Length: 129
Image 1: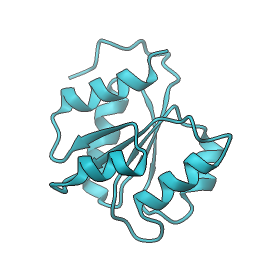
Image 2 (image 1 turned 45 degrees about the vertical axis):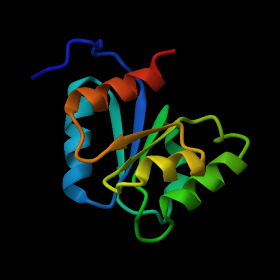
Image 3 (image 1 turned 90 degrees about the vertical axis):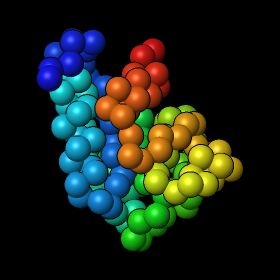
Image 4 (image 1 turned 90 degrees about the horizontal axis):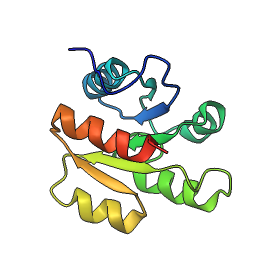
């Protein structure tokens, strides 16, 4: 189903940092269907250069990954003047994921498995400015 809430010319970039290829592909398909530009990074290693290069409007971040985990990524983002204001939404299946996300300084949390509408709403919330 094609999204109708976004114009085709939407230039908002979403960086998905998720090591589960199936989940990252589903997120990519859903958000591209709503006319977002989606960049997928499937591990924690090298994510900071990817952020600098792509300048995303929002980051969807898994907590546990190979390389640098989500908490370390958020810590480095918040310490960097040019990247600290990028909204970060933690996407996790951990039962305590929301509490961990808040403690880490994430802007929001989305539980896996997620509803498609909830995913789109949360991305819309942080990219509509």
